Image (tube, rainbow, N blue to C red; front, side, top):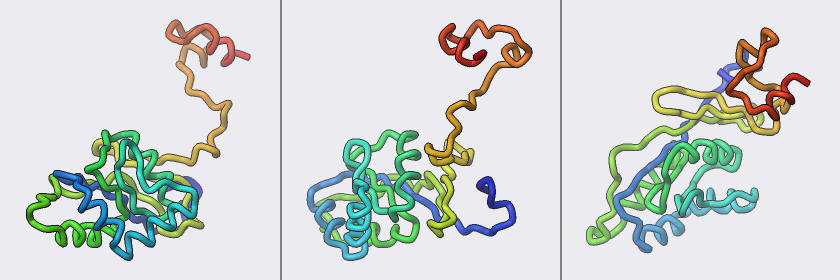
Length: 175
């Protein structure tokens, strides 16, 4: 549970990664024509967010979920055959895939993969929970990190010098 929310119940939504076998122009056109997905894409654009990440992966999430997508995307090799979508929009993406002619040969590879969890209420959202392998990691927004907080070795904590630290960085930690 996010820090500071110990006594509050917060509902989370999933961000899902879908990997498709192909990404023909017909599929991309159908994704852009779907009214629900088009509205989400326009909301992203009006919030100053891109509707694609990493080499053309499509994104259909709420604007307050976009930061979580960017953090989670760093852990995956994404390309144009990937779609990152809020869990509640998965049926629309699957309907788009199903509406394509059989000769387009667009199928889902594997199953939907949960890559992050975000707070449903954007007023409560304070970071995100990113899935790394089978572990959940709480990711605070980058602007809330204290720039002076650093993890140190026990040698430094006891006044010694860590041989693995660069001398420039080590001198910054001592001062």
